[in-house]
Length: 307
Length: 264
Image (cartoon, rainbow over all chains, first blue to last red; front, side):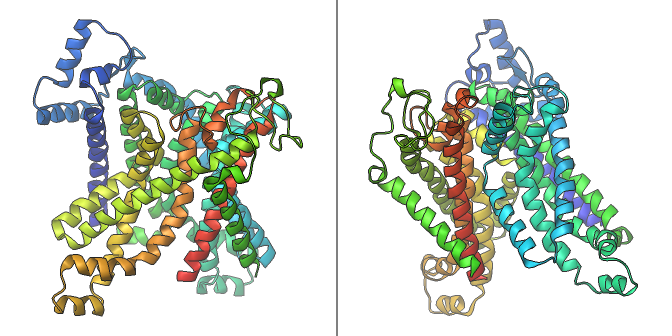
């Protein structure tokens, strides 16, 4: 257990350090003077320019610049967006709310839907499984941004059921959540059904059945817990996927959020913001992975006794 | 039996799309940029199967001509990623412990960062365009190949025929080329087939965001991006390029999984 925690800690530090280094490298690989790259397309006074050079230590040797940058990030200073005229941390902070709302709702829907589907389809008749694996194949093949466009065209423009433009509240959340849920739900359903089918062949399931437990009871009380383990493992991957799909989905539904912020920064060459988003997501990834490890302990009691 | 029908249909779709990519003139009449302002935003009809866009260009023609750039991005990114990933994997497996640790930690870090975000970072640095999209996607897909090749090489290295080749005094390079790579090829091919679909979707997404080929190029993602303002009045602009992407990816996935089952 101690070894496990140490490994996790080591990997976490490595990932964070990697993200900082990738950002730093990107900054220095961008063609043009580093000061100009940081400023982007906005115009600043010579005083601000001098301030940037001092802040980033741009008149010093490269290793010193790297150390300076690393130190700033460690103190939580993500730098300044000269195009938005605010600090990167503020910009990300103000946009985080709507994105977390979308991400949270997506996770909830995904887990509920795929658990239900897996419970209903595992070891059922052939045509049920065939149908659901066919749908899953389509689900993983549809690009998220196109699913979003389809939903918008059909349900907002043609049928008028949902607002087309970034409304607040629940009605504005429905279509974006469906769009982001499709690929994750299909992946998760496949995975959970497979592990559920394996679990249903275990001796303890037979024991439960021989005690006269109903089929649904066996699935809910005994098998589900085991099917959750691979699903939890997938969670880290899901976070990365979500951040990516938010860029297109927020744009299509004209929602505020990290995705829109990132897209505007990429098209406007506002590198400090893009770097900031990369770093924040790396932190998120690390946190999620720690949560995953804790969830394992909750789900599987055998791991607890080992601790 | 049903599976065979699926694989057959998928292969037929892929053949058709390959034909569209190689010889678009065989499937459609006019050039993809031919605008007819009088026929703008017309729905699907006998003259325009998939309707026309805001500039009066035939959507069917543009979908056909869009096959080449769209496939190119997916295939190009995968080819580059396989090459770089294979090199890294071999380096890790055969280059000694220190190199192995360095390469594999690097792989782990890249795999931990969100994929699309990494691509966006690359494009912020390089600017938009097809080549840059290919570079960006290859950067984050290469690590999975590196992992696979490393694992394969570790196993193959201990195989009898490699020991025999070594004891015969063959050079390391020759052993890698003649014995290790051919044996690692099959799983690599399967992974690459499935990943082409994923790379294709990623490339289309980036194009949709306006970061890939610039207008008036008839790329599928870019077509959807160009039609954005007209989705409310002309659904066909939103539907057909997306159907083309989804069908292609679906077919690639079906064929890829078929290959996977045959190998395992």
